[in-house]
Length: 246
Image 1: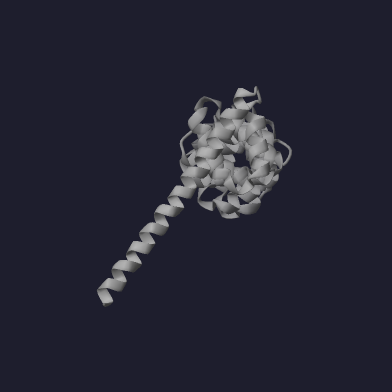
Image 2 (image 1 turned 90 degrees about the vertical axis):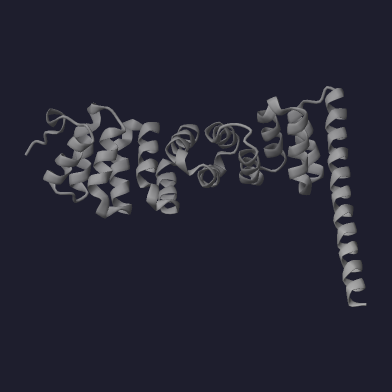
């Protein structure tokens, strides 16, 4: 009797699973038909996605899946439509597209940050968790796309990824090289014991016209002059470009 009960229970579980899968399939089919219908009516894909998600916000994954299956080459319009419907979903949208390898992480970040700059930090963190080896470029693209709060992005990203300080600093410098001495000073506040590494990174991430300013910023932040000069040379600076006047 015990075994009969177990078999019946397993049968009910299987039936329940099939029922759920059937409902999910029907939902995706309905969404696909809806997108096709709106496209035939000359409604733009972006507007179509926005209107569907405004009406069915809980179906975001199914809507994105259906839209990408139908129009994979128009992923930017699909993303923008999803953001138009609910900007707070910016990170979820980025994560969905990253998980499906729709485009490079930097391209996706640029699209979404440009559309929803208020969520720049959250978008950057989401992409960085997915593609940590590309953090430098992700920081650079984020700052270039949303240049209003670079110090906050530097601080928050370095705090979130402390072991990737070099990548964050390098990406920020490459995005806004003319403020390199400020980025050096701010990084010293967060990592006061990493002075030489900060100088070496800053020197190697920009051109020689900023060398003296980098060394001065490091010395002003508390790094011994001889260590600052040595670190600058390790970064590729020539002594003539970092000579500090007494």
